[in-house]
Length: 225
Image 1: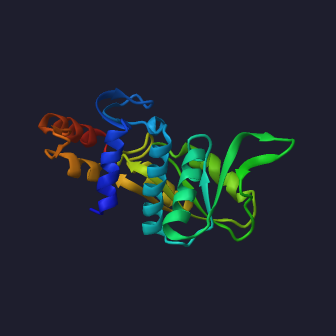
Image 2 (image 1 turned 90 degrees about the horizontal axis):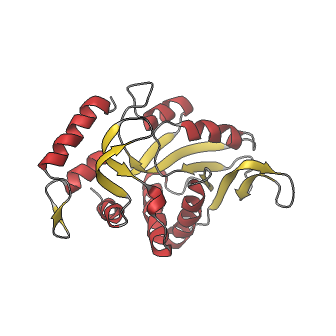
């Protein structure tokens, strides 16, 4: 596993973004873990988060894109932080863009924030986590309405690796199949488990045998095929 992935797992734990226990998800599923990207709230956290996203994007997509698009609302700070980090780490000026939930008809009018999108632009979409693919269904028409735009990929921070509500495939696999784009994550839950299971971190075992058994049972029921 790449070093930046190990550091990102520790970063999620330190930031109280990735939690373990018993949680009821929006889907109604009872999960032994929960991720809340809204817990990244400080300048230092956002700067580091942007760097981890930038490293993953560079690994999976190289410099083969022009715009980083963050769907409203959580995608807005992600796109800004990552665009800044990408310029600093790789010396390439990419543009950030996000959408408004409601179109503005005065001043900086339109549905977009940040850069305008034009014919020929190559776009990577950035999100925190994707469980149903609903936001991509909303995002794609917005991007395609801007012109001859090529959506090259989707990057999320964590791949939960569980099946969607209506199929045995994960949301990322469904999106890749439906829209023909490459979907990737900074880390997967498999990598998180592999790194933290029975391994002391700051003097504490985060994933012990009991939690590992609960996670195994969860994925036996809800794991993507």
